[in-house]
Length: 480
Image (cartoon, rainbow, N blue to C red; front, side, top):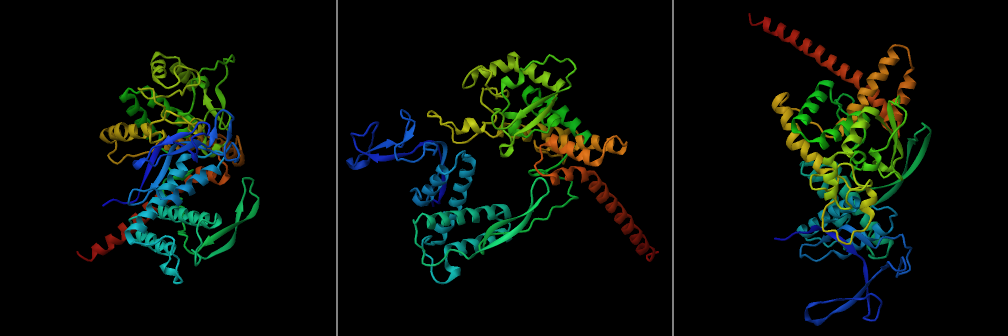
């Protein structure tokens, strides 16, 4: 039995139906001789769109998602919705739209399995497809078949889809798909100033309150990150050196000594690593990253990395090595200073930058984007097994834990200066905030409080265990 599914096209060029006389027209052959002609909407010769829309609207895409119904036919409305969203974005990230396609595929699969007409909205509220899907997701969450975050995202995608259907006049509904209301929530900006934000909620949204656990041994810094102890960092370096993989060793060191995220490390270019500095006393390199630098950051934030001079010299040595040159010679674009610094042995990028992903590649034949999968696979298959075999059978980590490790080591050094009276706590906080590139000081505070929280919970556990042991001893006295 076939079910609704998503496929990814390596490339898509948007066209419109034309005549044989139209410039650049192409014949599309169909069975039965019902051929027709199309022409591209975007004309490279004039650098403009044929349909009169702004030239910045995308009309050529790599890694384009298509939602297919159970019978294998494209779900027209869902696919036009995705295209519409893409056209409205100045700087689209295809991973976002691949996620929307996944969500709408899951919704279509539910509709097909339950034999529900997605366009029918009867008077009885609970018989409408949006309410039925909401109930299905809530039950799936309760049965642990679907995670809360996934269910919330899927419902949100469906709401966005129906909002578009109504706003564009694609679908006239007999009854509303949900009940909505406006609410105002209090927030604080990066400077601590309070403001109100208007949000629209619906009665089919899946909202589950998330409680941050300050004693979980992790830090919420764009994800639940776990700082590695000094001992664990030693295990990690030993495991990396044992594998003999220079690239993976440097990539991990990059995270540990700068706190850079994986997209920043892996989009570093050769030209960034071969700079020369005249000052022999320069202890660190202040390196701008973000939009306009060629190096990606989370949420396109401009920030400055502080790279120790000794480590920068290691990057430079690697960039000029024969090993690195051989990899660049195998890469698309060849051995140039604009090539990625870290490549696979076959010359493939380990992470494709946002700028490169946005450039249409007429010859693209891949159906996935490069987002550091090679690093994560190396960690799972080589590093973690080594450490579990030699040191700790339950050890685990993710690459971004190197960021938390850097942040925690940085925090420990600053707090020691506070304890010695050399700087104030406020100065320590601001120093860590700037070095980590935190938008909110609240994230920085989680690093400052991490050690005390961990110490507190351990002390409580020890005290409670001693209490239980005393009570147990009293109970056992009665058996004598």
